[in-house]
Image 1: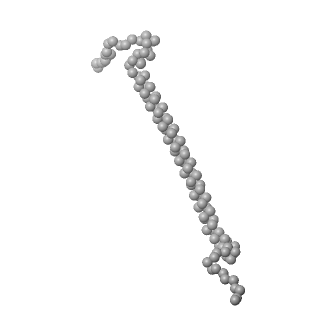
Image 2: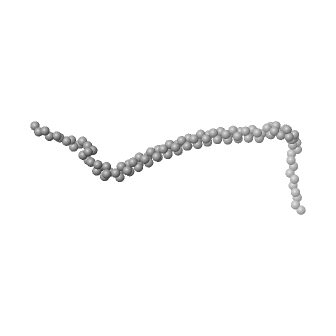
Image 3: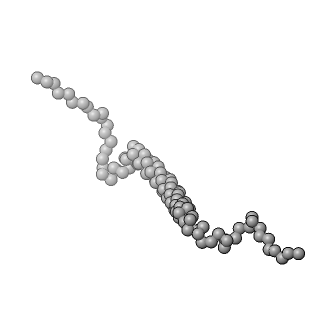
Length: 107
């Protein structure tokens, strides 16, 4: 029997290829690293935009409620009964006669 060592051709051993494989594919590895960094940066930017959109939506909702509250207060305070209550200390009276329109005639 012969004592021969058989090598498996399908088995990949990095040492057999040598450091030349890294040098030959350095451009490809640089592009892959650049794309990975861009992907991570894009994910961070998108997440920060989603957070700011959520914050602005909640702020808009709060401002809308404030607007509706102020609008209802103005509507209530502009009613005839509320106005008459507010001018009571000034001793103003309600007009009994309807205002008249003054017309000028041309000569």
